[in-house]
Image 1 (spheres, one colour):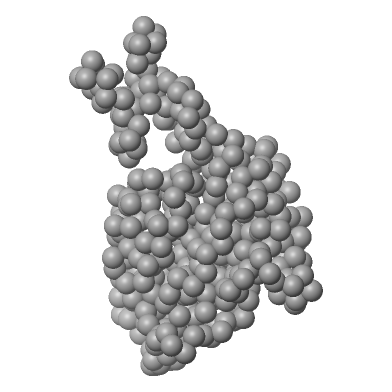
Image 2: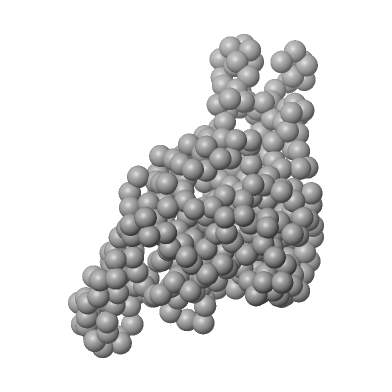
Length: 348
């Protein structure tokens, strides 16, 4: 909770309507969502179309029912795909490789807690979250795939407060954007508190039943306990951790004596950033947290995409796509090296 004790701002956006499908098309939120999506389609999606050359599989990998091949078991493979007959025959674990389905579902788990509504530059992490979600949902949905979402903290309170069932089409993307953009309406019966990302991940475990690509979009500033449900998600689904961050969360500049506020409790205090020792301690703790977080995500077996408030969205997505492409080629190479002889593949 180190950063939440240092940064915060008033909530400016995010509430989930009780009936997302029934939002009137003439509302200001709808108009804002449509205008934003049109801008992203012209500025970001067109660039991605040219760079990806229509290859959206680098962002969303599927799983089908048609057996394509068999290969040796590798770390993080789904144990449910182990072929026990071949494993017993060769005394080496082997898994079935299936032909990918063209149609799949993508789910966005959106952390809209108060710490996400922070930015030291021209945009906040919440805007990065919205832009990324809109672009990916539109990019994926255009290929006949379905898109759904689970929202946490959209009313400024630490609860899962909205679920958008997976559907296809541009209208579905607009519904999702409207749910993020709706002004907050707090429930007086719910007490304020710190973020529990584990609640969002546990809700997703029970909500997302069929195999899907799951994007966990969060700054991962949360209480402990989210590691286990993330691992459970990764066992069943293709999980991508999308980390939202701001440069000021990693290193403090010399700004003199400044007031800071806890985004969730409202607690305020003065900090002397002119103190070089304090800035060094801050940077050391931030670096330690970064290392621990990356190790935890790696242990869970999920890919990670880092999105900074000062980064270009197209460049960030392309770096991620290139990384997944390299991993796919590496995996294909290992699979070819460990491929079974033809007579065993026929009898498997």
